[in-house]
Length: 522
Image (cartoon, rainbow, N blue to C red; front, top):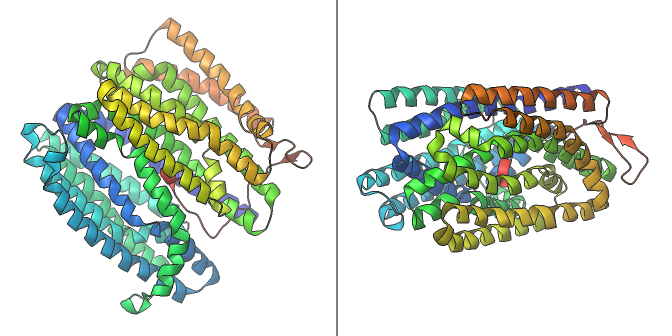
């Protein structure tokens, strides 16, 4: 069983990372292509529309997390009747929420040009864009039930290959459409249509993997209440997630312009890519923590907490070093030199607090696995509200840099002053001990990379992909050697004295019955 669970963890993480790698590579290619074909103003409207509809995630109400949790448990116990109740209730609820989302879309689209600074040439196009994207997102609610079922079954391989196929097809169709003279409407249509097709495919596969009876007779209030009890803190987190990470484009669009959104999104998107890499690993720590908590094994929870954050630091520290030292070159090679002056400050301001929180990406998952995440949910909600207030106050006098400060400052405060101390108290670990065990080794391993990057930058500053890849190749080789040394010497897996004699972390067994993906939701 232990060997099977190890292979399962590897399969899940590798599936997530392969899909992410494809998505990042497509984004690296597609973003400058779309930007230069459509122009700064049109691309800014693109980002604005998807930021607005990103708030539709609030309609989820935390249902997806309940769906994953309870379907997984039903599958483990062989209770297909209970699974049917959960799936049918989720499908019915999502259908109602999707209908409400569609009505909201119609109302908002009528006033979108009034609420935001949209260039006159796009006044006719923008309402149609919002209608198209909003309708697709609304339809995606009931279709998304299949993705939750596949997560509950831990079939991340299915989620991965359907995502990869959709991503590649979307990229190819957008390139063909823009090269043949089609504009913003067609590009957005392709962007929202392909995920819907992917969801339909997942629905067929999920129905075959978990065949359960369907019908309104399986929808009942008792199931709704049971799901709602677990979903309540998750709803707070979903609201906080939107306030923390989905408000910037809307605020900039309301107070500045769609062109300003473009400059901001270039810097913020690079930071998002870094976060997605870490989240591809961190999501496995929730079920592992849930399993250990169910067994009452607090010592193992401590090890997951410390080692999990150490592994997250192994990923985010070198990425942050590269972006801080070579961020200007990354932007120049990616979209062009004229975006560097405006986008690099945004990248830098957002990167540092984001790196601080990503280096602790295992912490919220441990809280979630212990069902001790209510306080964390309230804190991130307060942080999101402060984010909105500061961004609104700072965006007019300081532009997109002010908005970035409004987002980064509360995030840094949470990462430094609350999260480490809070989880250490929960797990009864000294804060100084946790910081040393989790981050000293990643800092040591990352130091040669920083030195190499600084020395190479003194030699020559990269301005194109080839020169940039030279820097990254050398830095990657140095980091790979340092990291390999840490693992071969077993220091990377070794956890020092927490509350017991020195122990070595043996990652599995994990909770083999429930894997929940929250990404930046938590």
